[in-house]
Length: 577
Image (cartoon, rainbow, N blue to C red; front, top):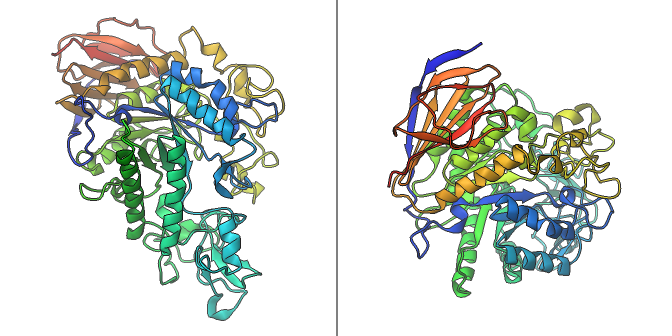
């Protein structure tokens, strides 16, 4: 069935890059990070160089040419620090050492050197909220060693009862957020697993130690940090019970039943910590006459109002950007609508501080892959969307080839939050999005020569990188998008964004810049749609097409156009100036 309609419901935004971030370089262009493609590598699943089934640093180094050819500006590595691997590296035992699973410090230095030669910046995943319970700081604190007594959050049991936690706070991994320590005879607080005790940022020495960690890796040559779980850095100092969330009359083990804001997360002091980290890296760059700024990006699953506070202000600079998860959390499954996409974009633009740089995230290691959430046929359309929207594009490894989730059983699973209860594993596990990268269709997908730490997804038989080289594919479309994004590195006096609901099935995005207008037409549904789209210029040509499209690059497009089911196109007007 073909549907014919005209464009309606234009929502308009104007984007300026000129305010508090001091973002223009000496040439008057935007700083490198503002239009960058940040590529997240989950090291354990990217490439195994030694055949032990675990991805490693040498494996990443061996694939840097792939990243360069892809057009990646920078890659951020999920944690590679020494860890017992209870939470796949997010439980850090030593911030100054490389975990043996991933290699050695020499391997990391080699990676840095090779990446620098190729013009790829390395960003580290920094975990400031908690450490492993095997960290020396925790062991010293548990023993009440002088100077470390309150490095972590310790409390007596309620009314002095060792069998009763201090309050009703619950962990993100479910159950009480308090763990009794027999040696110290007190409870310690953990926002996540009991092997991940929270640091106490009300102790100024903790902040100073974390700053030393940052400086150590800056001296090594990294270009920035992705800061994990930042809303949880500070807790209510009175340790009062958290009230029940709206709609709940009782609470069991799931923290969703509690109203945690300003008690367990999102306290004002949290933002000040991020501002102090920003001041530290800015000062470092200035003292060392670095040509490029050191970038801080923050992870915060919270309200839009709270999220944008991490950007800071003209007097207290914060993160260069804080992850925008709207396209991820607002589109959790294939039942999304055009309105859902438009609202996800508009809500972010409304709250974005003037002068701040946007960013667009489709997936990561904590959420189902975009192909599994929105459908394989829509992958190109969503990659087009994030490439065309102003600001930073963040890609999780595998999204460029349209990788879906893998298949993992509870018995095979490694996610500590999920394997507690196999009856809910399929709903709660993050293992599915962490299966190995599918380089080819061989037994272990070209990832390793032995059985990987998580099973390879069965889709490797038909969806893998090798099958997408030199043919029209998700990979080729993604490369075309990164080439297109090069146009946006130059500062534009005009940079206006319009989000248009053409009909219930077709989204239009218009980006008007000094040099040209760019239009995305995205049919999210199965049926063909004949539409009249909003246009300002007279002539438009096709510059990128989805794999579902039969149109040719350079083809002129009339105002009346029929889009095939799940077809997406990016059009460009003739030069405006």
